[in-house]
Figure 1 (cartoon, helix red, strand yellow):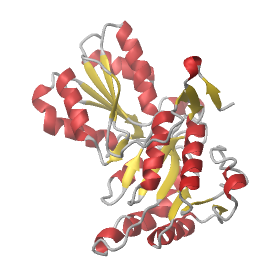
Figure 2 (cartoon, one colour):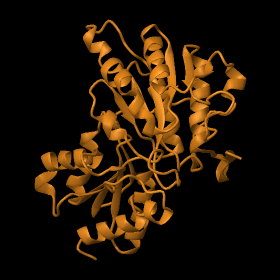
Figure 3 (tube, rainbow, N blue to C red):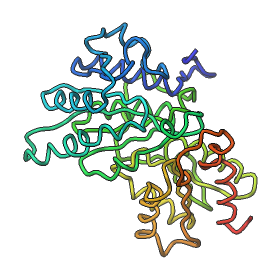
Figure 4 (cartoon, rainbow, N blue to C red):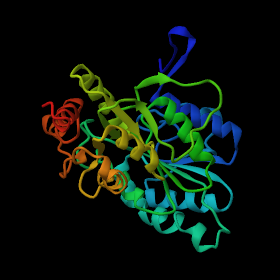
Length: 335
C-alpha cells in the first residue's frame, strides 16, 4: 500500500503517491494539463508513478509518445505557447541531452524574445540518482545543466510533502519548470495534508535546526544529511540541515543566514562535483558569509567519473551518511 493512516490520524503517502496525487488533482482542476511521454499511459512509467491516470483521464490527456524526447518535448513547448499546460515526462534524466535545444534555446527564451507576449507554462519532469544498478547512461544527476539557464526554474523535492506542494506550484507557474525526482526515493513515506496546498518556488526549508554546522543538501542528499545529523548529535555536534528545494531560483538568504549562525558549512549534492551545484552554493556562502566562517566551506558531490555498473564501486561514488558525518566531524575539529 502506498497510502496509509499514520498514528494520530495524520495521512502518510509515499513520494511516488504524492507525485501522482498532485498530478491527478491538477488535471481535475485544469483540463489544459496534459501528460506526454514514453510509457506514461498504459505502463504508468517504468517506476509506476503515473499508474491510474490514463484510466481516469483517458489517453487523449495521458499520451504515450514515440521514442523521441526531442520531438515530444518540442510538442510540449508549442502546446504551452498556445495555451495548454503540458507535463512532459522524460524517463531518465540522462536523456535530457536530447531536450536541450527545446528547453534551453526555445522554452527558456521565448518570453523574453517576444517582449513578454508569449509564455511557456510547462513542466518537464525527470529522474536523477545513482545506486540503482542502472549503469552510466541511466544514473546521472544532471540538474546543474538546467540550473545554469536563465528563464527556467529547477525543482528538487526531498520529501513527499515537498514533492506534492512543489509540483502543484510548478504546474500552475507560467514559466517552464524542470522537476527532478530521485528515483531511489519513490518508496519514501511522509505526512501529506489532504487539503490543497502549494509550496512557492524559490523558498528553502530548514529540515533540522542546529548551532555548530550547516549541512546544505539537495534532493536525496537531504535524507543523507539528516541521517548524518543524527549521528553528529550523538557525537556532541549540533547540525542544521537546509534544503534549498529549488536551485533556480536559489534562496540565498536562508542559506547565508544559517551559515552566519553556525560558522561552518558543507554543501551536499548528488550531481558531479566539478562545476556543479555545490560550487555555486559554496560561492554564495563565500561572497555573503565569509567573515562569519570558522572553517573553509566543504563540498561533497558525485565523483567525477561515469557511474560504474559494479555495485561496490557505484556505492562509493556518491556521499553517504557516514562520509558526511566524517567530513562534518573533521570540520568541527572533533575527528
